[in-house]
Length: 598
Ligand SMILES: Cc1ncc(C[n+]2csc(CCOP(=O)(O)OP(=O)(O)O)c2C)c(N)n1
Image (cartoon, rainbow, N blue to C red; front, top):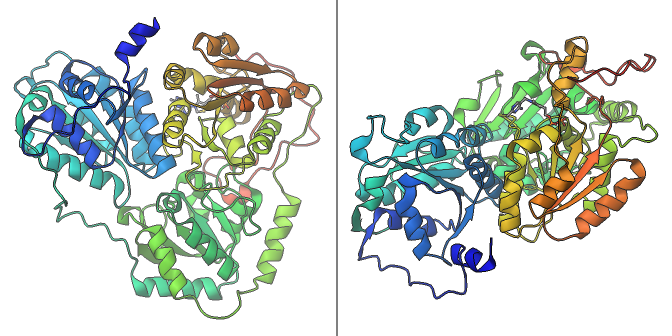
């Protein structure tokens, strides 16, 4: 595109800006919506225009400089970007799309945000109210379709309701257990006018999430933690969401408690801390999983007893008294029977716990720590290097070294995600973006893009797979257009590695549709998008590629060719118990013959 045309079509912050409209003047619904977003501090929208949302885009054009719109290349990307923005910043992310296909393209993102409790507001255009139910052009019953994958959704029927609805939507998205809220805005409503005033408070009598835990239950939990030798803190994404890391650290140190974060909890406790046992769950560390199996007390904070964490439910933490701190009462006693339920915000409850901690030195837990240290020493994360090939685990270690664990790390879904979780030391909360609940391939690049916009001064790293990357790679164009600084590392094993691993282990290595037969040249592809492309195929090339990639400003795609048939270990087979954890393949077994991955 010529630069003159590009300038004409993009926002120019140097243009004279229209003054904010006076609240007393009647405004179109489209304008009211945008003023409401600004009232909520939402100054960045990830979106894609179309017929039903045209009035809003028209108002947007008049508000250049006051609100930033990021034109994504696919609506799924808009929602994941809003998620990445929200998770890295703690603010509510916003996406905006048109009706029909624009709206249905948001479903994966909404379901993803719902599973991972991410606060976002998605605005969808809708056909005019008199056409709703008529199978009108680009009509989809998005309120019906998204009911099971949103925390709440609205169809705006009258412009007079709009400001109240936006106020409620943001409140619902960020309060209690955070989640996605959808506002469906018919075209005629966005064209109607009324006087605008933004409500100062919400009035939702039936929705009153508790923040503070019940004081007696909090005291009981603290007494149990202080007196039970074999105790473990199992901490999840709720600690990150509530900014509870500092209180968690103090609690763990004051009571000398071992800590294991879930996949979603990575970063809420310093990974290198001596009390940290490493990640819990299907591909978690031996020490973390065995600690859960043998503990007499499990204190779950902001975690939801996901099946990838509990394994076989009847065997889960069989000997343990269970304390569960969660903001969502529906999560308590859902999968696992809890002895001490505490409904409240993780940070607030942790602070309540600190207030009632007993005086005196921390409990020694000598025998328990001896056992834990033995497990850590005897069964660390390990892999075998092979000459001439880059091992995926070595790649993750190299990424940890070059970023010193200080980057915001986004991932996609598959083996690379698990190796990143195992070997990349996430040092802080809000620095780990991954699709935990839904396991959405294609989440990574748009989420990284959202984080790069929210946190322009942080290094943003995406660890992706050759399969996942191809699901949403068109957002490279958005990243380049927005001049973002994103380092994409493709762990290229030439196949859908995690599915291949399951086919190897549970289907006698009968590979079915996991080798994709054709891959684009990712270096040329990066260049075609105006990004920088680099490739490492041998161990001796890796550090030079990473050094150049991380030293180059802008969007860089590093295609790192790794060993093909490598498996993620440890692994607790689906449905097995924690103590059935498999550490590695039979060391004495002969290496298998190469097999076609078709
Ligand atoms: C949208 C979507 N489709 C299918 C799957 C099932 N799935 C889980 S992991 C995986 C393979 C991922 O391959 P790749 O991105 O190359 O990562 P690798 O496992 O090789 O690291 C697939 C197909 C999924 N999680 N998400």
